[in-house]
Image (tube, rainbow, N blue to C red):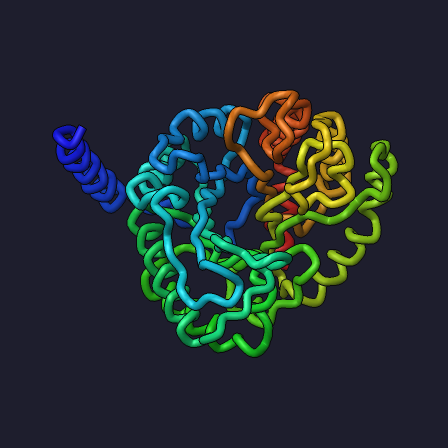
Length: 361
């Protein structure tokens, strides 16, 4: 086996060079925020158990679904909530050459690309998650985090990525005490990346002090829209109403004419998934019909919202199917909600026009 390793590595290295050359020799797919149109998006979860796997088929399936935008989501790690070093894991983090390749595959299909690195805890203490990190040496943490984000921003620039999310759901780190750190990071990223920059706020923590420094707003959408295990579609639509009102008011005081996207919107296909859609650990039985109803309630609530600049459903990964309990809509009734909504918005200028008006008014 050792005799095969070196040639294979050489081949992979050559492919990386070739992909980088092709990206640099072609015009970057970067759009000005003034031309922002509704993103018919899907999150591609680049966290397969084999991080070296190709995502070519996934990109093709997402394109055929009617998506014109794709978020390439992959994971970085720190050891625990109080750790100070960010790192890539060989057996969990998508390698750079695969990220480059997948960006270019998406661009070949004419899709806009958002690059979306996010942080997980590798060995979390009980009850801790990435939204509650508290590094013991904050300066060391920021130095490590900045190095990783700038590295991926450089890949994004080289491969023609349209937009870059500089963080996701880091609720304990995105408050006023770290404002200057975020501004310094944004400045560093803008020095190497010419596309649009955003930050993805957690659904229940959206008052971020550096919104004025990014190009558009992004929110992960895991609102608790049900109170029972067997909600009807009407129950779910009703469950959305207070959250929709709250988001309308937040947008009015925050956005200053810029669009807002849902960088993640998803529901595990389990019984009771609408009650706590952010909780993927529950051992409840599969219920793809509830996932379908959640998707449909989301569509009915948001499809004509004038300031909504895009939707990225979470997420396309693994095999899916009726017995799958995860978030993916693959092989499930929810897929038809996406297909019909995106076909409608692609054939009608209404949504794009409204989104553009929200930016320019």
